[in-house]
Length: 377
Ligand SMILES: Cc1cc2nc3c(=O)[nH]c(=O)nc-3n(C[C@H](O)[C@H](O)[C@H](O)COP(=O)(O)O)c2cc1C
Ligand SMILES: CCCCC(=O)C(=O)O
Image (cartoon, rainbow, N blue to C red):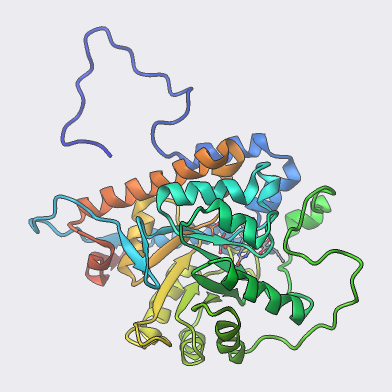
């Protein structure tokens, strides 16, 4: 974070070369470096979105369609980022979104991301489609809180087994991703004929050669309570973009809803998370979760700076999650790279909060925002 004053250059001192890596977080530069570090089709898989990628492109812009109204003279000289998420303490409201196949970005894959999140005190969400098992990633987290993200598997027996294993392995919540009944149409992957590398371990998939699975029925809201019972964990529903759906999830036993377009990777032209968030917050704010505590709302999609994150908190999100920035961090610098992204975003958020007179995440509210009506649309 910058100090109170500008630094004065010493006589004869030259500006530092930044070749040793940026001293501050530069996500555009990180993405460029990740593009060079990764095979082109892997980069495209990580970076890409569905169809014409309209939603993907709009996601960061949507946060930036708001303008901040800083509070002054409120006696705030420090922003404290600490929070709790479903009762679990976190050092920052910036968490790691679940993303698949991290072994393509770095040999240590999810283990490196887990170590980085633990070091940063950031909440980690681990994808079903991981290249290390549910239990391996839990041990790499070394007691740091993590959530497990569950997809509906081809076999319901297998899905249920993963839910139970997540509970047994010490994860603190089960995140049901509900926006992927099938994979979106990702043109880059189609063009590249993208396939996962032959040696990649899909660690949470059953060994090939077992009995053919009977696909179960599609999930409904009733599965929320069922998975809570199976896993013994609070359930977060990820991929909600409407108030009515959010309320239905809460009434069916969800402890939290996670507003997301899946990084613009599922259906194109969906409403950006930044625009869906207020509707979802309105629908569930003050609703009790299954344990009587207020339901929580999280958001992801295109959060690329501390000010983006502050807008999300002001709109009512209790936490923001980031996907691709951590992909680029992992691809370019392993655990240290992910850590730098998480620490960098948290530092930017703390800085923005201080400048806006916001003492804590809970202190952020809609009074901080105005729609930027004067901007060209
Ligand atoms: C490469 C990649 C893989 C993803 N895999 C998963 C996944 O396995 N499970 C899931 O729930 N979401 C997955 N997502 C979606 C993310 O959790 C998150 O919603 C999205 O990346 C947030 O947007 P951002 O990348 O703009 O930060 C994935 C996203 C990316 C970019
Ligand atoms: C079925 C797993 C797909 C991983 C994923 O969620 C994504 O690529 O967006």
